[in-house]
Image 1: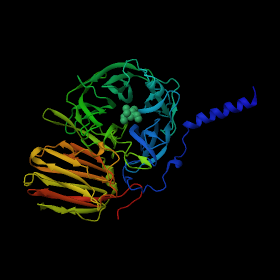
Image 2: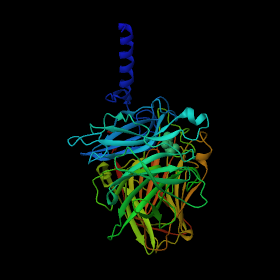
Image 3: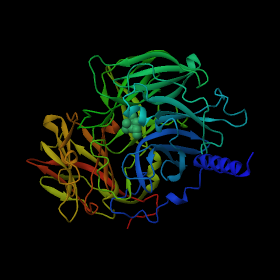
Image 4: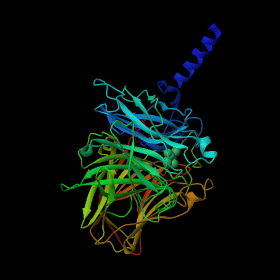
Length: 523
Ligand code: FRU
């Protein structure tokens, strides 16, 4: 054979194999992370576009988080899987991109599992494989109007998740449903029937498939709601033991593209049973988070937790405006990692979610808020940066006479994020209509955002995490979550508690200044 020809073949081969070989991620590292809108303790990629969390698993002391990523732009495009890792769920290190688009298409959302028994045969006794299932999305097929341009594929890693090989038998699950949306495989090991289960979003329903080796899949069943025509995405399925009992139920998480709790996209769940074939719901659909900005929330495989807790994370944005938000170098952050627990009140099952305890590591300064009756307004001051803080407040509803009270985060420019509570109406609101300069998206400034919140006496507990461009509220010990983002011209530096027409009786509280895992301490 001609030498030049061999050389060209070798060059081409090395080019293609290079694409999958990780570099050390240095090229991606930002020099400072000090941009006005850059969160301080939430994960953001150094640069470029990010959406859904993908392929999360824990292995030998490290939590892995992949995500939908387009390294060449700050808007959505040909999807890759970016990768970050953490030893403690607090401090994240961005790694090299692990999956690149290929001849089968873009790499859409999916999940990863630690295949301890090497059922896939991708590893060996001594090297446990991590196996990722993702959707190959063929953009040309989509444009041509084809019915089957999304199919499920595998990749595996035998070095704990830093370098990946795509399975040569891809795709492992083709679409013969006649339904165009066929994506976001979530894998789980079902020990009772000794098989892998794949939950897949198929337009307005979830389909379940079973496999003993992750390579051959059999259709099992589907679950949907009569009459629902919204687009379902990013399902998750897992068992959870009830927090204060012996009972175990199954949770089916589904993200919904339209008509989220406050417009646009949102994450919901059902509680019920799964017998290895069929999921049966025992509750209506409930919102996991009532804010506008927690989408595609899914959970970690193999996390070192007991059976009554499950670890997950969401994409802190909303498809209505995600590509227009005014960050320049990157787009989107994840929520903080949250722990889910299952509860039952009479006949109603529901989830609580709270920030992982590990985040307490970031607490630096501590300011006590003494009990006080507030009949107009009161600024809360102390040794903390409002835009990088955690606040716990307890409100005595029995003694509170006001029917409208709240907390406002604001800056010297007059921009403000207002959180209001209306006990008479069992309702709360987050109003970001004046949260920062308008103009990048109409949908973003529509509001206020509301959530039902039972406030019939007793003590209302509120926990706020504030991080430059996001506020995450956990009320009623995590039974109500509310996540909203905003983009003030300068970070909020002041905080006030207020009440209208009556007294707000504060039982007390605490504000912690939080450090940044990127090394920006409190003042
Ligand atoms: C959800 C989603 C998924 C899809 C991915 C593409 O946000 O639309 O259904 O796999 O994003 O980036």
